[in-house]
Length: 457
Picture 1 (cartoon, one colour):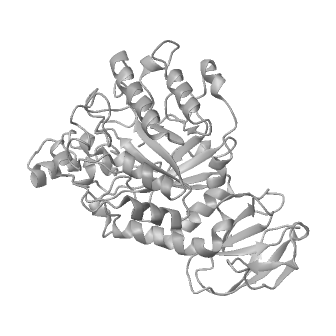
Picture 2 (cartoon, helix red, strand yellow; picture 1 turned 30 degrees about the vertical axis):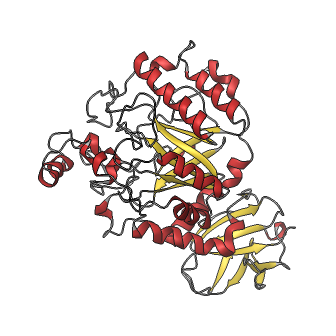
């Protein structure tokens, strides 16, 4: 993850692919990212902070555990010392052989994602370490079919996802591959010149991988990362444009993110707090981990750095209220288990979705001339994409309170105000106060935000 250029603009030669995003994508609103790889064996990174906030020595003390192969090659890094002291300087590929996935239950994992409200799932198929989670062409035995788990993990994710009725996507690191096209460790966040492989040989290698992913798994989402080799950007037989043509021919309702370099995208992406200037206008998606890393980081297990269920609800509601999707990441351990803090977060989301799903899934933002967010208490607004109901998502911290809402009284129905519940919900008292409304919100026995539903006017 990271190292993407938020200032990229579509070049003219890719305008042929510009089209409205298919309706399923903005309607889904919530997806689950899965970062799983050989890096899940050491599962080690310094919990430095969220990407996009100011931190010195980002790569030296990289908080992303999936970057372990890079970080251990930086002299003086804490990860290099950890690799020496704990793993006795073993080569990185030893982790592939130690990765067994013995507890991986794809159906059970996807069932949890579905209960948490996910409409699509995007697992990594090859991260920057170059290890493929399927029998990718040209990888020899350096993949999970021939070593380590000895399973086509992409296929297992794909089958379980589709069996649950969810859309399936694939993440592919095209801009970095520290094995097939090693440019050396990345040291400096402000100087990544020479960090990416640029030439035709690696372009053809990566093109073949994405073609194979399309042919085998027919993904609904192509989620690229860290740019694309420059030799694949211009017109010609090796242009990424041909990969896109193949993708859209195989799946006309497919979508492509914006990290394939200056090529093409159907939606923009932000990451934690980086790239937030892209959030708005055209379709967009915020991605982040439940904790501070995407890959599993054992150092986070005993730290209060993970989103809990109520925190995940707030983040999802905020993103949807501004017109975006949330791609929330899970990092399984080497056995294939979802770590306890991450599972607790997803179970919290699932419990909230039982009654409140309509407030976010398939929902749209409310125009600011109708209603505006609040901070004391925390309030976000959405509206139902089907029946036009408007929802105030309010963080009451689990207590019964009178809430003053910044909403035009003549734009909502005061005779049909309810606590959102799957069975209809109890009516609430609401009255105009000044330029807004005051609503009595009861305690629900949960610290997760409550949803006040205003009937369609």
